Image 1 (cartoon, rainbow, N blue to C red):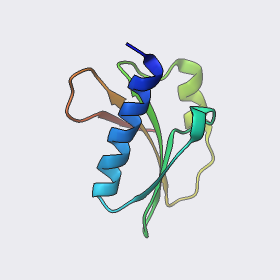
Image 2: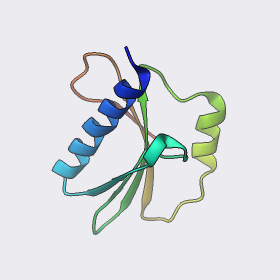
Image 3: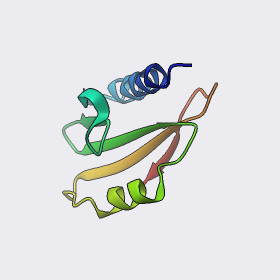
Image 4: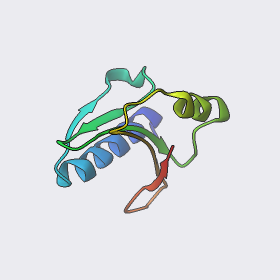
Amino acid sequence: MNAKAKGSRNERRTIALFEALGYVCCKAGGSLGMFDIIAINAAETVCIQVKSNRQPGVIEMEGLKMFKKHPNCRVLVHRWDDYARLPKVIEV
């Protein structure tokens, strides 16, 4: 299994979920930033880190918790397990 292809596929699945809810999504190229996807609608902004079959590491999770955000911004982790139809969602 190509790990990069698997991660990209799960990111596209998360984008499809948010677009169905009326958000406009932007995917980070190369996943070099803190978040993989930024989803925006009229009421809020959602910053999403997408993981496959595991939680973020301790250091990565601490960075997500320390992120200074606007009151209308949420930080989520979407964990896609193999063969799951929906992700496990953790709000940071």
